[in-house]
Length: 360
Image (cartoon, rainbow, N blue to C red; front, side, top):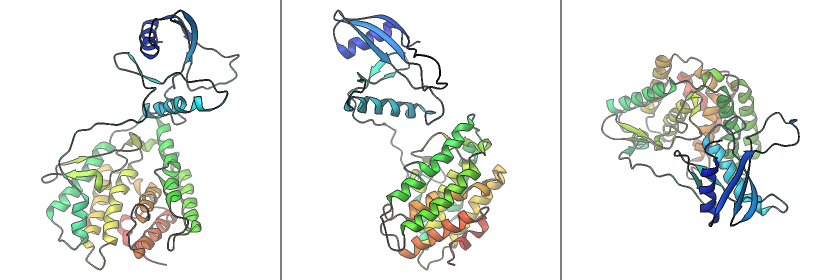
């Protein structure tokens, strides 16, 4: 039961309650029978005296596992929510505190916490989107542009070489691609009831197409790899030459490699669509170059069979009036045409990227 031994619990409870605390017993809390075959953890019954008054409390943890509990942050979310809400519901068992276990086996109270934060190093550099904006405005493609695209490609090849060990995480990642608040359904729900040509019927049709793809992908658990999860040009800072740092990886350590590849390469197409009559060839060349290099270096020919719903996810971000309120209507229309055509195709062909944007 370490770190939930008597000494650790006494130290923790003294800090929480103040005064003298003596823990008299700690042990598993068992229910009446074993009819339920699965649980999220084994609660502990803690019996103690506080300032001479006998008390009992139940200490619960959440065990790592499926059902959205794979990551420490998932389990923290569940327990923080419990402490925040239990005491607001009539006739519900009261939460006394929520805490954490430190690496040195100490127990830390978090019951008065209201928000959390992360502190990171400051990173020098310029966002990669500046390079794409220059090309969008007609700037000539440079050897450095090709070298940077190659460096980003090779980085994904490197991190995607690391295989994940839990097939359930792949199923979860595909499920979250549809249902997560930051992904397809969450984005669709963020659209206004009607915006220009974008109607609920249009969005519903797109959502149905995406749902069909979940069933095509969810069993491909052998594809689970280390991923970044939000590999777009605003999360990539370049310094001199091809020296760069990635920021803000999102939605888990493991997932489908197509998520990263589509996230970045969709931006080559997005900036090309905004060229407004200027030559978009440089951006399209970078798109095709990236895909050819990635497929050649990984040998992952299956990538083209799974990319479609990830392209739809990124397309919904780019076409969104919330994320891009000033985007020209013709560009939004082409993005929806692209999403529909890609989702309807049996596989994605990088060499036909421009054709997916053509109107019927």
